[in-house]
Length: 394
Ligand SMILES: [Zn+2]
Image (cartoon, rainbow, N blue to C red):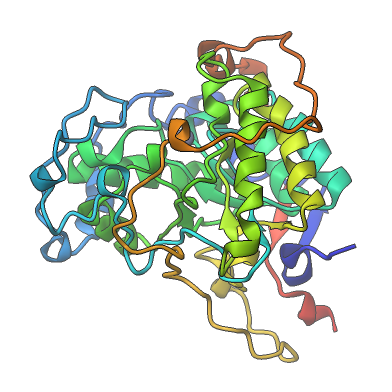
């Protein structure tokens, strides 16, 4: 069994009768958070305080992309219309030096699930536990408000948590203040529930440019996108614009390229819908069968401090010298490598493609987002993560 990096470096204590900050809050206090799936108010005192902590002289002045909130902006008709200093990944495939787009080590598979937690997530957690695999969950603040217990379970199971903003907005179309509010409110609720201050984030739709990046850098974040051609496109299944079989065929094709890759890969999957979780298990099995080694993003980049408050703890006396976090890993392509859209990937037909998951229990996004009010009432028993190096105990 491959030990989880987090399980080696962190000791988790399940403390009964010691509720997390979130669980201690009354319903009234929990209403401090912005309305679900809405842009937070940028005129609130707390957002103004967060905004005041940024050195705005370092943030590039780029034009705001046009988009209808919360969508990802449509890319300009010509790349010439994109400012040269924008490095807008969604529209020109530009990768900044400190973006993480691949795992540096060959066969390493950065396993990531976005948009949760949801009522579907526990089923995925069960599968990951069976496979003895940890992943990174890029969580949406609004979903954490609905399913705080599921977020705690992710941490308890040794998974790595990253941010995916408060309302899943396309970031390049937001004002500077809105970007800060989207990130910090999501950070706050994850902290209130788990005690962890997140360090990695993934822009919704991969929508990031140099203005967004610099704001996030100053907030302490590392930007994680995904490896071109390794978007599972599972998110299209609920829209019925792609079938399970096509997802498996495209993944099979991507797997066929592994022997030619210099490094590892980072995949994009989602734990918001029944259909996306249905394909997650078969995709995991397919990749492992082909020799990929699934892991969370902290493991992928060999970061011994996967949270901003990892370093708050007392240094371990017996801890071996930690390798410096590997960030700024570029794809094997060039910085300007264009994205390959799903339709451009040549599917490979394979008779051994896993059977499709059940199409029953179709969940609409609205349903997935529907709050389960009683879930907000956490039980008195809560999980507290004690981020102490395992070496402490030696
Ligand atoms: Zn997303």
